[in-house]
Length: 181
Image (cartoon, rainbow, N blue to C red):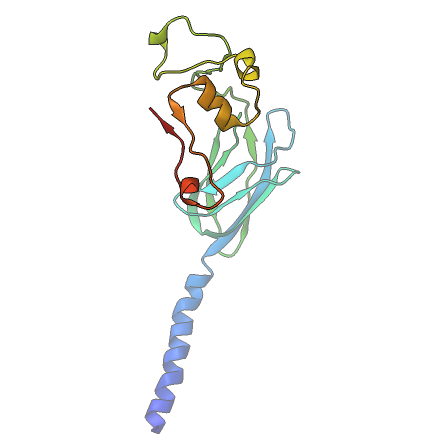
């Protein structure tokens, strides 16, 4: 390798280090505390820097810390279920630390209505209420079968159910599921 090539390679490395060094130092740290309106520390609060993937959650004492936040004007958001979200416009210093506390006010959580369907052992009075045909068997119907094997009970009480009998010599019937007529 010639002397010129040996000198060029270190020069390029030095210049690239000088150019990228200022770019690496253009971040800062944001830390603070999150509390409710009564001053009680809130844990589990999601604190994010909008427009970036930087996020953290507050600890049990309400403190949080975000590192590597790009310097300049940023919007911070603090959110927790049951509280109104809070935002803050901040200016993050180059290679410095900024203190930003949040106070979250309580908020009611609106849930969508929920339909709860509970099964019943009672006989249905109208077949049109059901989306599919359903047979209901009482405990007495099951006891009258004289067995505790589910397949035999279902085959006895419902003529439309057919369970194949398993044989000792052939395994083909194991892969055949029960059928309904």
